[in-house]
Image (cartoon, rainbow, N blue to C red; front, side, top):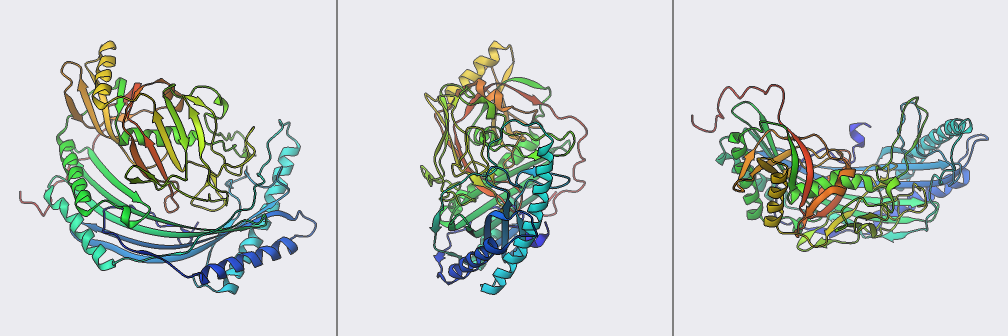
Length: 563
């Protein structure tokens, strides 16, 4: 995909600014875009067919209007500031029928996506929009009939078990929200970024630092031949502080502080965020002189606050999808689905933990949940899904890709890129019955370490933010000595991995709840999600000491600071 088709630039986003206004626009633009989509859809359904090949049974158009502002500052000076607008159109054409069609088949170098994504005009020109949709539809249909022929030939010579349908039948959804307009004081924003980034002038040991802000307002239109007509606006305001230093031995040390919100009003106050930056600078300075983990560790680990929520986001959340794996004709190529698909009605967590996903929730206490949405990216209304009850896996998240015994979507088909929707979380809640205080969890950690004849246990208070899969790197790790309960900050620790099956052996959970608002998925096309989770004590986790050579420290000191 070219740079012109990026759904949003890969930006980090950093620090805070004061509230700006978002106002509602007129409906003229909505009417023009929807009319162009509906008219071209009607024509395609009636007339689209190539020779004697299959006619489409399903066509869906997605149009995304994006308005984005980005600015970055470092050490008191602005480095980047720009505003951009773009519109992309996606034509999804399915041939065959709901039971068996061209989707979810990997052949050659293809990816299991449905449809063609292309750039369109940003003007609200009815004819120009139809022209873009026509070109995308033509390309999508030709692609679909070719893929369908290959898939049908592949399946014909294979002995296969009875498969669920390829695509679910869903009721039509009509949900047209009012358009919104992104408005703010750009000069004030840039001045404030300069001031926030200037805070690092008080931390001589921090070598590099940036403060970035991005405001992205998307309008997603969906029209399909089942009768669905939706328009959903989505505003994400993201702030990020990113800083780095080196230890005296040359070890690279990095910290990232992300704050993601659904409106400018939901950002923290200027002073609150300034305090967070100062704390980040102090943490990095302390890490620079902290001792290095001197031996590999295998034993109990307490994950506190952000570290616990990040762990659940990376280890548990991806495995709550009921998305069926695609077919492939690549020799030796295996495609896998969730590790928990075959564990329905079996325990996957301790009996005192339960999990549900509810995109309808907009807040948790005083915090906004950015995973909120009314209609998913496939035009299906969002629904609350109870996933794990008293440790027992009872359900999975579903898109319009049916799975065994789950033939309908439950409103969790999501993706930043149209045509690549998969079953994903919205607002994931992990709840604990009889949770314990931090002091009690720390006491239990020490008891477990003592039973294993260890000199210390480990507490992790922050993990590297973002991403999926492996847990990521610990950034605030502490030894807790069994002799006196003293906590000692260490650096250089890494986690060798944690499987979702291991979560069944969580030893205890806290009575707290940390809200992690995250942007997940491909850079430039992130999906906003939220995870609310308590601190947890893991019975055993392997932590490795650093290996290999370190980079050499900087030869000269920072020019701003005197020798």
